[in-house]
Length: 290
Image 1: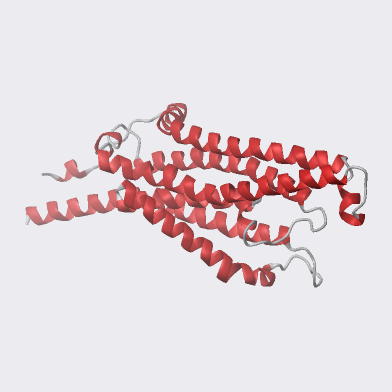
Image 2: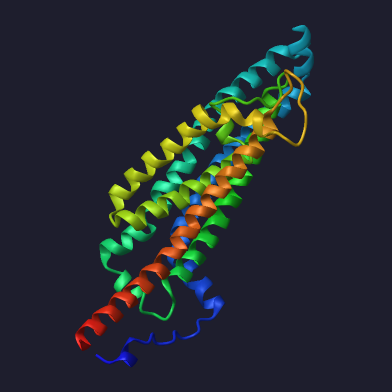
C-alpha cells in the first residue's frame, strides 16, 4: 500500500433536491404515522372544544359564578363531558413524545445496522453525516409542526375548561401544552435516534429511549422546574402571579438546546469516526514501511 492510496477519493456532488427526496422516501412511513397520531388527537380536541364553546354559549360563566340559569344543567353537563375527554387526551399527549422517540427515532439507525443496509447506504456518494443531518431536520420539522398544532389546540381547550383558573403550572398537564409539547417531542425523537446509533439493536434502543426519556422527564419535574423562578430575570412577578408562560418558555428553551446538542453529536460522530479510521490506516501503512 502506498501513500497515494490513503488519500480519500472525492465524493460526487449530490443534488439537494435528490437528498430531500431520498429522505422523504425513507421516512415517509414515520412521518405519516406521527401526523396521523397528532391528527387523531387534534380531531378529538376539536370535539371537546366544540362542547366547551356550546356550554359557554349557554351561559356557563353565569352558572359557575351564581349557580343559577335557564340552561345550567345542559352547560354543566357539557363541561363535565369535555373535561373527561380532556383528561383522556391529556394522557395521550403526555405519552405522544415517548411514542415518537421509541417508534420513529430509535429504529431509524438501529434497524439499518441490524439489516446491514449501512454497508450499502454509506457507499452511495452521500456522507453519513449529511444524511443524518437532513433526516433529523426533515423529521424534526414534521414532528415539531404536528406537535405544535396539537399543543395549541390543547391550550385552547384547557383554557376554555379552566374558566376560573386560566393556565396553571400543573405537573400532570404542563408537558402536554404548547410550547413544551413540541420541544419534548423533538427531544424524544433525537434521543431515540441517539440510542439507536449507539446500541445498533432496535428493541434495546427502544427500551433505552423509554428509560432515557423518563429520566429527563423526572429531572425536569423534580429538580429543574422548582428552580425556574431564579431564571426569570426578564420581569418581576408578584406573589401569586400565574407563571405558566414564563415556565413554558424556560422549559422549552433548555429542551431545544438539549435536542440541538444531541443532534450535533449525532452529525459529528460519523465524520470523526471516518477521520479516526484514516489515521489508523495511515499509522498501519507507516509501520508496514518500516
